[in-house]
Image 1: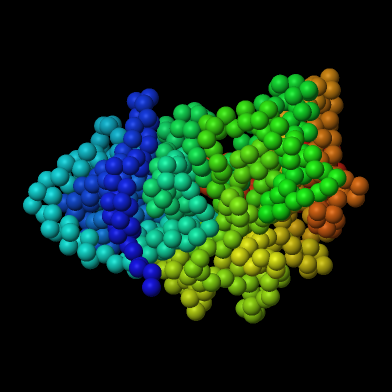
Image 2: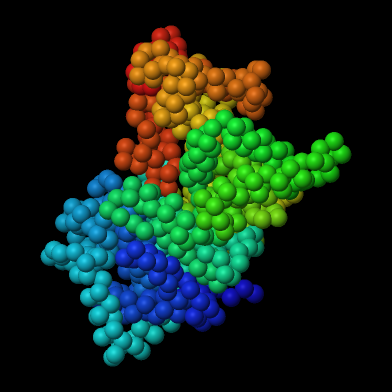
Length: 636
């Protein structure tokens, strides 16, 4: 029987096994520094003693809001070694209301914040009677009720001189079913809920991840996602720890924008072997690559497109890559030639060592999967949700099917159920339901939601999908039940497939959101890529700022949307009646600041619908249905 490790057991095991090996890499003062496994573990223990000196009792909560850095990892270990519960909060939270809710709802006794986050914390802490101290990570002037992390560490060293046995007793008291995190949902479909994740949830999910994805012991992962999310926890530092690898974090700054600018610099300097990604990041990488290709001129772009088409044709659906075809025997030869001449230089932009991305967070369009595999850096899409700690399945090197979310982790049970809860045969679509040690303990202070989500030990994900009939290890995720659209005849359909495909198939559209609530037809809200559109109309000799130029931009959007209709390049990909009949050109991009993206760059559908409610209703009028209406012209 598998031993049920706590996170502390887990860290002790691997920090001993890989004692002197580098675990953490961080850029400070312009220089990348390295911290060993054992040093990371020792610092965690010192901080644990500091928390105990501060009075933290077993089971008490500590909120942590900071960009990724070594201290983030060490502080989480300190909280856990002291028997506390970490409440990791996204540094991208902009609303005081959102931050206040999480700190108060979690009953956090202490709050830890970096310099870039401290002003947010200072604004809300006076309304948080449970908070006794704020611990600041950076060397800045302190206010009443604040201490510096160096003071906490000094208290820890002092505590260990006389209270080491007390720390050891606290450590021994921690069991696999004790809470490790309260991970708040990002709220794409509902108000945030506090997901209770235990020590065993985490260690079990790491073991499960190792059943589907393999990495090398000497590999380095650059984590460009927020550390607060359990995807970065499990697929990031705990997964790499279990394999003797290293993790590096992108240098932060005073804003999220600064961190974004640091990503390509960090990639070039760290030269990672693997990175975590989400669809929005993957799309941005692709668009940046193709913008660079276009700048090199039409000859280079033509060669690139030919090489890409050849590789995609050769790779097929990945699992049947390069299967013999007498008439196209030459493709394999060209793949090797173009990989060296065309794609190898592109891979240098990712440091030159990248083997693959681990993708998660949402559906990843099949075309995007084909694209990255063609250039030699596959995005191996996985699927999960925080309630499952989070990984449920993943594609991997040698084991992938484009369009799927990969093989389900083991050991874990999975079934697909109809609306009545009956299990469906393989190949039929219904709700994805799982049972295993990675299933959360429940929702904090929300027993009703817990009872409706976990039934008889089975987690009802709220996501739609089917198990592959040809290979039952593979799961295909088709969308969320809560995002289903309802046509005028009552038929329900999932919008994500079209939305992802449209944005991936054209450089002129950054985001698309379908809307239909028993309406006469479907409307799509489009966020245009104004820079790409402007360049395209200028190439035609038009001014993008005048009316003629704006109409030309709308023509380009219509052209790419019509590709999904009869006679188009993507004809038949989606049923004709689901395709949008009216377009709303967004006059504001989707951002975290306006609430239309969450902190993991997922689109928040209900916020988009609310923000553009008037424009959507206008699109159901004869005037608004016309693509070239004045509101669209003004917005473009």
